[in-house]
Length: 189
Image 1 (cartoon, helix red, strand yellow):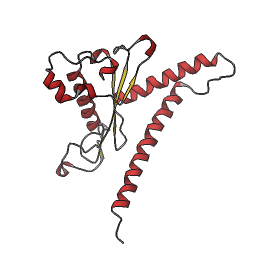
Image 2 (cartoon, one colour):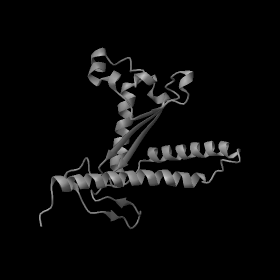
Image 3 (tube, helix red, strand yellow):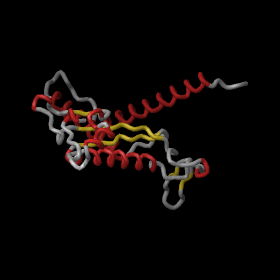
Image 4 (cartoon, helix red, strand yellow):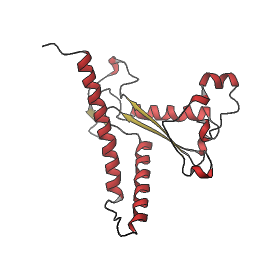
């Protein structure tokens, strides 16, 4: 993180910084818009990806069936909480984690990209996908001016395709996990 211009909070002692291993800390993705201009943390897009289970903070006794409230239409996951609650908690924790370490974190563009194993994508993750789709569309529009590079997809289609990629990646990860489980613990017939 320090290599992209993050500044540790001055109130953190050297001992605390050593415990937190700040110099070794890294974001999952850090995009610097123009490396030739030098590193400016305010311009850097920092993405921290987390996949969390919807039941990660519950005991088995708290688990319940998936239901839908007839009045509000709110869907609750099989853990008895609203779908997305675990993603919301994890995103808040990630934001607090970065803010507690770095004094200029609020200036940077930080996106906790949190996805629940049941498929819920946190609002900041959806916003990030929309921004990426918008940048893709702007880039395509610039190239569209040249006749040999026509633009084929609208902004909505681009956003949908990004969400489909995230969904397929999650499904692939879940199926790989299941295959490993079956290899390690074959079913008895």
